[in-house]
Length: 245
View 1: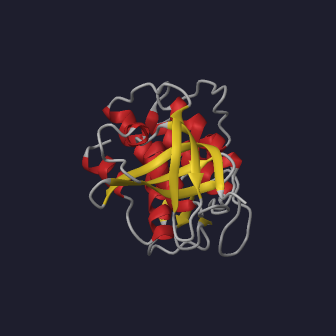
View 2 (view 1 turned 135 degrees about the vertical axis):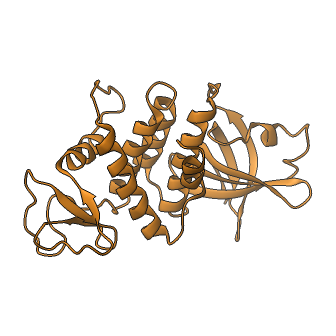
């Protein structure tokens, strides 16, 4: 019985491997996240090596191995449109989040569809907003979305009022349970923005306005929560900070 499989994939990460090969991490439509070696992928005449670029959408034929898979063949599904520098920086956040918060060989077609829609929308809309919305949607799909409807300490419903957010609890905290140590301000405007971006329709996004203060507050809360979940800062998010984006 053949161990080969074919699937559509989006490239998350590529790096050189030994002297002549490439190592890649992709997210596929039916097989989830996969890792494989492209033997000879660093040679200029190797077609697969040239096609295997971050954010590319490919049709792959992969041979499953005991330790790691290897690429048998690949072809381009569609000609990608180039990202500008800012779009590419935010696209890197999308692929790094996907790589970190998904498991190998766990089919999640809804994550593939979200990833596909996000990379297309980055070229059309404000990438800063798109990535925030993507992060919330991804966290919900993998079961890690913060709880903001009720206090993570006492369980009371947080209504139309300002609150706080605890990265440790992964939830909003009401005023009565607020501990000044380690909690971030979570204003009503930020809470409403959280809910709006989580439910944003990527296929038909309607125009909306955002207050700068709410946006910065949500970014700070979400990225601190992500860092708490991963135990380390993400390279792509650190790069955005360094570049003032």
